[in-house]
Length: 93
Ligand SMILES: [Zn+2]
Picture 1: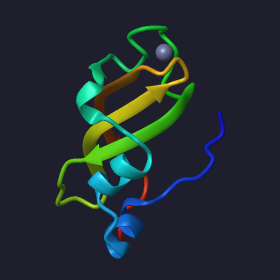
Picture 2 (picture 1 turned 120 degrees about the vertical axis):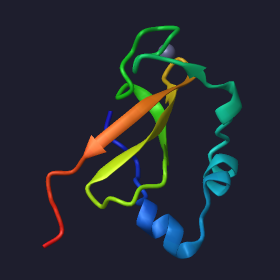
Picture 3 (picture 1 turned 135 degrees about the vertical axis):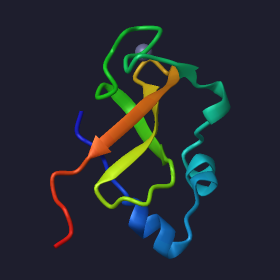
Picture 4 (picture 1 turned 30 degrees about the horizontal axis):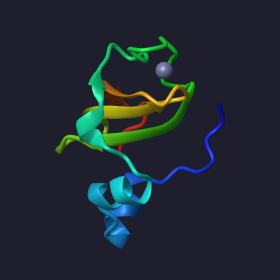
């Protein structure tokens, strides 16, 4: 599914919109999320087939590597999470 909107971490930090603010605004209950292998533990849909994706990034001192947790609200309503790592293809000059 195509996203309705996206928000960058940089923008959220700039305007002071915290993870707690996102959770309150979008009724995200991180405590209810079930551990997963990247698919919904209930219906097995991929994280792309979801109503919401929310990323909690671990602090990093590298501009090209990031690690964190992806929380997903599946189309079936199940909240689940899994670990996430990324390494961007660009590097500062
Ligand atoms: Zn599901």
